[in-house]
Length: 261
Length: 267
Image (cartoon, rainbow over all chains, first blue to last red; front, side, top):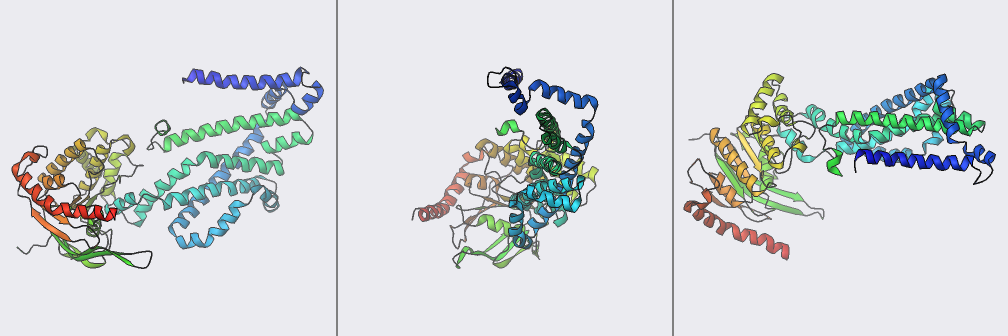
């Protein structure tokens, strides 16, 4: 399928969905228009609300804070995940001792941690970073652990025969192998960092996208809620695109996805 | 001459612990001596432990008894004077062909510029002059083998260890890789320990062919000198009557061992 055809079909889906939404909320075919608009707002209202927050410029501060929290959560979580993943993979005893605890903590739904983080780190950005951290850390940790443990033994033997010492093996074999696993999970971990930030804001903050949505919900401002979700969705698409760009640059040694599928 | 052999395996045996507590004796004590500059093949049925012997000579595996000596020194740890060509892909996929060749020099502390110049020259010798910037996945199986060969040879090892290096390649590519190897070896005679199950390949390339019996407790059961003249044309040599005679003589010894392996599989 060519690009133009695909794009037109994608747009078609959006037009149909928005069309149904508009139909349901403005024609009265499916019930009282006022009730419908109370529950679902209308596409036009949501659109103008979104334009308004951008034109007035109030949104930038919230976007900036959410972005900052996302980036911090990702960097700290990924950094810690890489270090601990390496450590566990190279020291099987440590990994065996901590294994049940890692599983326990990872099985815990992170939302329940949000209030305790708010208590420990306050209502500023750090409680959100902490929540994002707990999500990102485990994704990166598991990937690095797996990546280092499952380094191809033939490549390893070859590297030894080429005269590499432990330090050089770490740099030229273990590190790139682990990094490729980290990058393959980059979309997931960046997404999780954002989820941590938004959920944290939703549960208690004074700024950020999650805070905006929560405020709108508090006053039954459905247009505001949908507008917040729309901005969040656009934000996610842009971040995801940036991640793809970075991935493409850093993993240029990999066979491209076209060959794989 | 009392010159020390390039590789000397003295009374080397290999056995493993089994999960049921017993021991599997893969290789009975064997002695193998490979002179400096000699091209020696080891041929045997699958699972006879020939690759393990190679790993002992490389320092990648420890013998259960006996010692490996390299130029008269008992081997402890990795054999630094040997280059090893693996059967499987062993290139680092995250490094380009050139970087893969360079790394062996860089870890020795060779200056970057010099390492690059020498690596480029070596890539040219294996016929990959224009492919230095490609990553392994962008190369064919035969090209990857060439890079691996360059990676090993650029360090100037005195000994080459090869574990069915051309096994995964198709017949034509194998022949061409054999010719390339033969030519490179002719120009700079290293001691070669070449493990294969392909008798044609073994006779075509080698000065000596050793035959191993089927496991367990496999031993060396044949040692044949190959007096064919060099340089050899691997495509044509198969029509040589001397080649035919040798092939028949060696195959008579090998055949029963190969049958034994399959007999055991059926039992």
